[in-house]
Image (cartoon, rainbow, N blue to C red; front, side):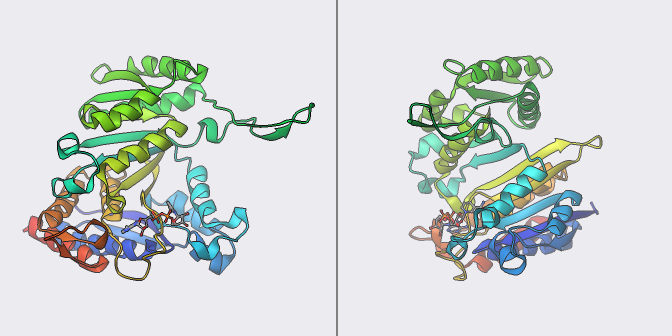
Length: 369
Ligand code: NAD
């Protein structure tokens, strides 16, 4: 297959540029072995952008982000920018990208590779073979609802408030996406809210049930968020796709991520609305941050970012086969005993960031041959 697809690369800060270099290596490898070509534009985001332009992302970069097929981001932030004004802090660049691109759906897979079973704090039999997907609504709910603030009441006492609010359209589109994603997996969706104590939860459940009428082939179940947290650590393999709101998704996706035990292995995707041609704005990034404690030491694990790129192949370009080959290459490298420092265990071979990237490309070559 031959195609030129447009990517915006935003390496960011700390280990961001180091792990993104390994994605470039993978793309170069794929161009050779699988005739897949990408046009890559580079941009600055986070502290790197602030140092050069005085803001966390420029209008030009935003315009590039709106016009490419997908954005791939490393990580932002670090102590160097801790005292920068809030609106120019590194995270402000990330938030603007998510908001202006209307990336309402955050996909967080939690997959346990057999060779990293020991990294989980849970018993191997609980997590072996785990492959679940948490879909979190990202642009509405209590993090954005009005009114919000800290106010002084007439009697002089103070209170803080946030508002959980969801429109029907906001619930409809995220739940719809969960059914579409489940159709490509094990066809099961668990919709999570607190319908027992929250009106917005009752409404979420009603809308999810309505949308489900359009997807009869998918099995839908409903679960309260507190029970879901418990079930995730009791028996996580019962789930296929979990769809939930912004707040519960924030918590449950971190909980699910840690079932795998290794931050350096966790990819993510954030997707926007599909246009008439089916194209969605999209951003792919590892779950981890800029890891300033190990930046510049060749210790960063690039696999989360490489696996985020595999998600990009799958969700932005419908290149399921190429995504699977890349994921298999990662798995084979782990099975061969190669480890970066963060996932190192006795008897394994420790490699640098570059070493891991090179090993994945060598594996891609082998799989092609
Ligand atoms: P972090 O994810 O950067 O690091 C947490 C720990 O995990 C550190 O010990 C780090 O060395 C390790 N780690 C993380 N990724 C790794 C990798 N790929 N390979 C090996 N080890 C890895 O979280 P933090 O320390 O809380 O935050 C550091 C900075 O990153 C802060 O400025 C924070 O705001 C920012 N941050 C950015 C994002 C993002 O860009 N999406 C997400 C989280 C944190």
